[in-house]
Length: 168
Image (cartoon, helix red, strand yellow):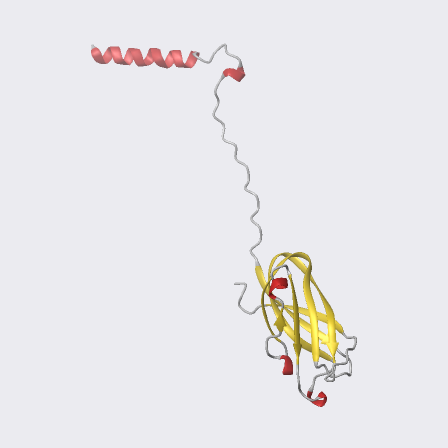
C-alpha cells in the first residue's frame, strides 16, 4: 500500500511539473542555454631570426663604425648581439639601454694598419631577434672612420635569416 501511494504521488508531481510552465509568458520561464563561441585564434608563436648588419665603405679601409638597427614596423625584440666577419668577428660594443627598446646601437673599431682593414661591403655584426608580429628593420650608419680618425660617409644594409634550430 505504501509503495502504491509513492508511485501515485510521483505521478501527480510529474504531471504538476509538466503543467507548471503552461500559461506563463516565455520570458518568465527559466531556460538553460549554453552559448558556444569559437575561441579567438591564438597568436602565432614567436620565431627567432638573425639580422646581419653590413657597412659599405667603398674602397676606404673601415677602421671604426657605429650603426643603429631598429624595428621600423611590427613587434620584435633584440635578444643578442654577436660579431661580424674578419677583424670585426668579436662582438661589437652596444648600448644596453637601447637594446631594451626594439633597437640597438652597435659599434666597433680596429687599430690595425689601413692595409689590413676591410673595405667594400663589410659584415660588422649579427643581431639575434625574436619576432612576435611580422617586423621590418632599418639600419642607419651613424659614423664610419679611417685609421687616422677621419670620418667618411658609408651606407648600411641588412640581410635576414632563420636562426638555425631555433624555430622547431
